Length: 183
Image (cartoon, rainbow, N blue to C red; front, side):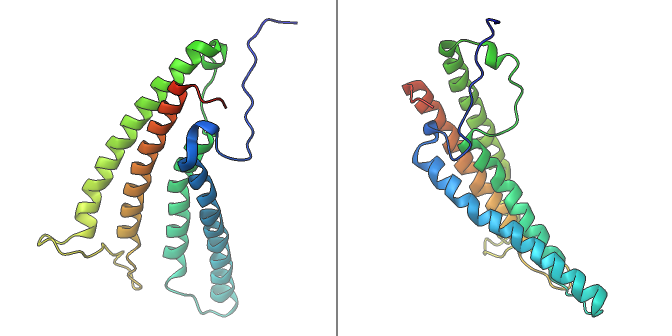
């Protein structure tokens, strides 16, 4: 037997306890975006059939699948934060005893909250240009294609919301790590 520290194994069935109520809501919301990925796949299958079998392509399928896939990707970061299932290098982290590891969890969560807030600020700068005219009227940015949906403007607003919620989730994680909420 070796004296290596035991690796923490997490139940991948839901959010970690430290994520709190917000983490449970985020985890449950993941189903909506999973359905969106399935819808994007069905739209693409329909587009292939219409284009290559009936020579009748649509002008909306491509932009819709990009939008559905894009919002799922953006939400995925928030989802992984609540479930503590993001990819990370744990070479040093797993070798640290539980006491100091808790300090690492707090510091890492606070740094990630700060980074998320900075990204939210950058997203707000994009939203300010994508959702408002120079006169201050609300008008979403459009794609400029033949169909011309408002997906670019919606994506920027969605990114702002997700980054803001992610910052809040990291603050909740830091608070609960500091309180000693168990995994």
